[in-house]
Image (cartoon, one colour):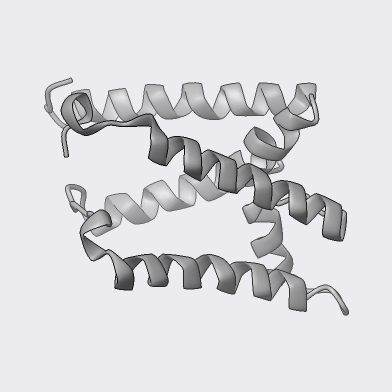
Length: 146
């Protein structure tokens, strides 16, 4: 898939609308922010009466991915260009950043920005800038073309 020839805004628009709708429903129905790291983190240190909805949310995310793969596997493309060690280190760094930023892109970027949170704006700008700088730096260090 080439970005310049195959990109249409419709799938991005539909995905964004579904994410916004689900985040709104989560807030309206449960009074909870749909921040994935916080929801998953709550399963790692569970409190009584707070497990079922978190587990349902996480299992729903996994089930949706599996359903998508089973119904249209050609839409899910994985190209492994980095080593498993690099992938693990990257995952740990993202996890560290999420803890340091007290939330992830879904919590700050979707839910926080929609509530006009200054803290979420700063966190989201930091996430995006750090990601761009890191991806560019790794691409340069790996000798790839930009």
